[in-house]
Image 1 (cartoon, one colour):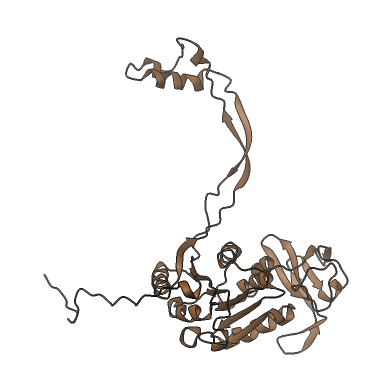
Image 2 (image 1 turned 60 degrees about the horizontal axis):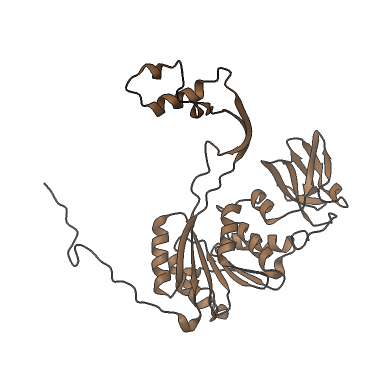
Length: 351
């Protein structure tokens, strides 16, 4: 299976990425027949804007090959977690590569690590986590939605990485990750509406030698409550970051050359309106003359990177923390709720 390891030749059952353009890619499973809407087995023919592709014809071809369509051509690429993120069927809002890279960096995972993830969603992050921890590590991923759990489990098996992951339906906020995982995890990642409710279970699941925690939350109010829960359960080194991707565009620019010959002269005769202004300073007059002293305006041509005029907006906040070894953990009780009207009913003030 193509996600387990890199290989050269496409085989039956592999998942391939059909590349038409940067913004037009499709993930296809190589099999001779598929079921149509009437639940009938038909020949597997994939339709694109450049015509049809008989998927079975890909067997035996090398990854990276240029293949002919009925009205054009495309490339068949080897799947990677990054390409899968761009082509997977969305069952939930997914986490994209900029955030995924920071999550993996903050979790400090490596081959052999045991990682807990909740919730699974569409499996975008799961594929990247599995690539980091295999072949000796294992991912335990949880989601409360039964349908999503069944579909993502089938995808893991179809991609050949089912042996590195355990998928389970569970409400981790209420029921935790299971007593069998207590003290087993090197890192815990949460993508939940109420991550602070799962923080006690995360602390119980992390090894006695300590580990890392990361939570993804779209709202700052979620971050505040999560940080409060982390502090109460002995986590340290709390940090919240936001990943905003900025792609610099390589452009050729022209800029006039500044003439500084006037610095070598005691006086500079410049026909400029500023020279007639008695209130203008000497440096201001000389500066304007430096730009206009050359009637030909010599230009310097150079290549530079320019930031885009618009940029992708907010996705979410990443809150990372460290749980120290068990002998160094210090927990504190939760703060009592405060209110300006303790013990008093809400009042409506009228003028």
